[in-house]
Image 1 (tube, one colour):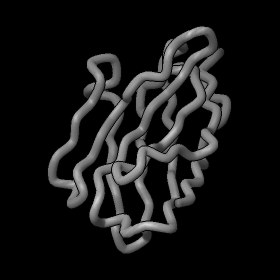
Image 2 (spheres, one colour; image 1 turned 180 degrees about the vertical axis):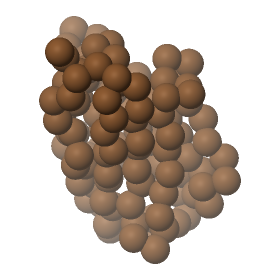
Image 3 (tube, rainbow, N blue to C red; image 1 turned 90 degrees about the vertical axis):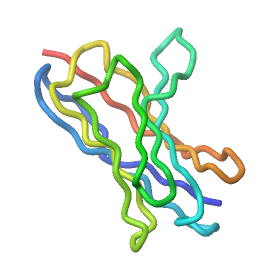
Image 4 (tube, helix red, strand yellow; image 1 turned 135 degrees about the vertical axis):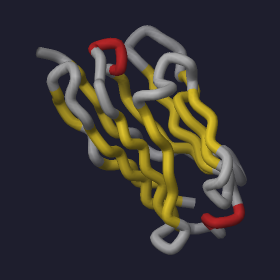
Length: 113
């Protein structure tokens, strides 16, 4: 299993970013996928989850209405569109696959003026 996140960076509050997680080594379309984040000194928290078909999505209260999770099973990729970013969104963002719970290496998101 390999998960490779990308798309992080430094952005100003109110701006947007789209994270991507490219998956390989398993049947991507058969499993739900998740995005987590971990800020310095805090526990890793679930941000969003998407079912294998993409038909069901769930979000943490802190990001609902601002973040959108999606997937392209033809490209074995899951996305996290993050709008109206806030300084509290600053964290390392990780994707996780639902078969074995494996993690990617993460991509850093920093929201600061």
